[in-house]
Amino acid sequence: MLEWIDEFVIELGLCPFASLARTTGGVRAIATAAVDIPSLLSDLTFELELLVRDLDIETTLLIHPGVLTDFEDYNDFLDLADGLLQNLNLDGELQIASFHPSYCFADSKPNDPENLSNRSPYPLLHLLREDSVTRAIKSHPDIEGIPKNNVALLRQLRLEGKL
Image 1 (cartoon, rainbow, N blue to C red):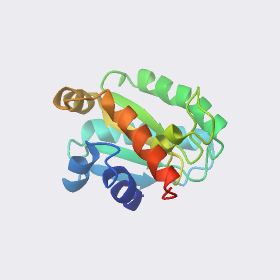
Image 2: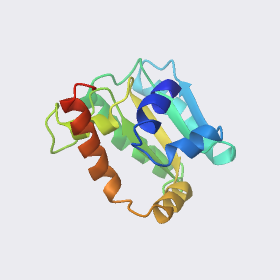
Image 3: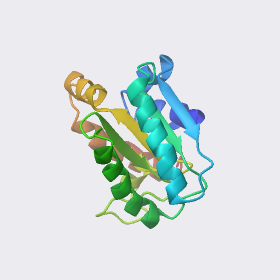
Image 4: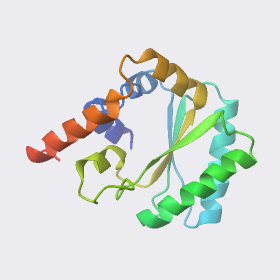
């Protein structure tokens, strides 16, 4: 999974903040053996609590190849994940970003290039610190341009047959 981050996310510049976290060793990538939702929720709880406690971890990728392989099921699960943040009183401290091999934004068609920005080799939950996200937003000169630039880049790479 770290290879995907290096070769896709960082090399293409899809997330201008990923490189720093990756080079400083702040990315925790962990694959869970969960095969059902209760097990995944348990692992997610552990990882959220660990991220709060361990300040050496900047961000966590919770990879779950054995559960929620269907995108619709995965998308429904995100409500449970957000509810878990609230139940743990971590809403406002941590947030969860979503990546899936079949990711499709609500108003997109499955083959639209913008979906590629949230597609990953395996289903995963990206756990982030809210304060880190806030700092990143404040430090970037054109935060709103990132998604637009990503769509343009991914569309061009697809046209060139590189994706």
